[in-house]
Image (tube, rainbow, N blue to C red):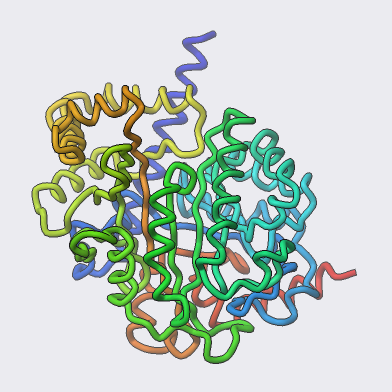
Length: 455
């Protein structure tokens, strides 16, 4: 019996791996040659990212930078069956282990039973769902998040926090005018994530999103410093310059440049030292004008404080060649969203298949990288970890740039749409989120929902 079950698991794994490889190859083919750089992760490690629509158009906030139209609160939620069809379409595009954002409006306003069913289904078909929320519902009812983790198997959540939001129940944060005023709120969310992990014993991972305007640009360094201090709770922060779509407040959209944003991020990473030129460390996820990111490790030491170490340099060809070879051999493989037994099984399978490469290339790279984090090299890192005086946490810093309607029609806009990595299933097609936000597709879909399901 055991041999039979293992043979089925092996066949399933092989089928999923072949499907994932086809998806990666399809994504790679859509990338123009000029963007197939060594730091381009689309088509090598990632196929893309999907998002739902209509899960809960309604929202109890009235944010100044909302991408939804004014009629969103009058739109009925799509039935669970329709959301499952969307998830099936996303699964067909992304393959096993694909990322999907459970989003649209404030999804926590949907009934718990239906939300559990949606998350469970996403996991069952092989997707890794991340629930997108303003988080206020969970602060009012922490048991809701705990139920999603325990009963639905939710492993990832993204919480949006910034000064453009309006509607928080707590008066202390309701009318915050500076990001500094929201640091205590961020602390509460970090504490909530840690508490849920302790109570459930589950590996809940968290990200945070941040709408960027000209008004809060100069507060980015402080938010980055908070992110480093709380990297154990939040593994990713995504800065999203505001595009003027939906019911966004006129004049609020950001006019800042990519360089200005990443300069402020650098100031936050090195408040007392030379500011790093972060372009030297950026990875790409599709078009360079759409998404850029810097992956790194935050090292916290009782003696030396907190420091961020990027994982690779764009101008270090040796390292990038190693990453390219690693992705050729293991591209798309993900341990996210799986329990300990499944993770151990996948790691074992990879090792058995690639043991020579792991021993001769991966292990030396890891040792060399870890050694660079401490003046005393690897022994210093190991001693600090075992002595409890040092902690290492992964942190991914992202900038993601949506387009407005005018940008969609430009040559650059069309080029970005052609290689878009962030899509939504609408009317049997997968379309760019920028088209959904700025091209009127969300409004058209909402009209369909209202006509079909509004009683």
